[in-house]
Image (cartoon, rainbow, N blue to C red; front, side, top):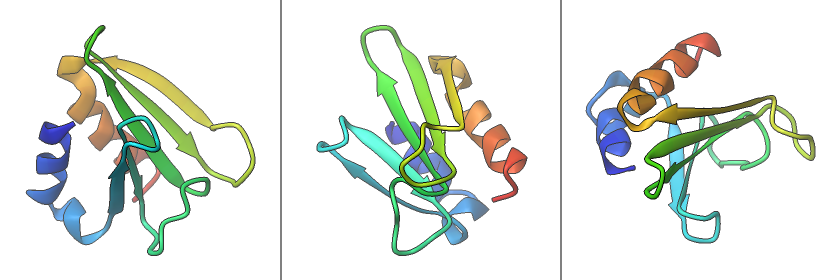
Length: 91
């Protein structure tokens, strides 16, 4: 998770995205374009499983609905796929 946070902070994304991490949300990084953050609306939830070395992405477009986008990626592809997702939803 630390490489992804560093990537965001070192790029232009730092000026457009808001995020937080929380143990309550199972070591999850929640990223959105809104402040204050609503974890169930237009937010990308990212976790990294250290056992299987996989990233897990879930995008919630609307509150109280299932995620619109759920994907798992290899450790090596996580940051690349994050950038692709940000471009895809035009954040």
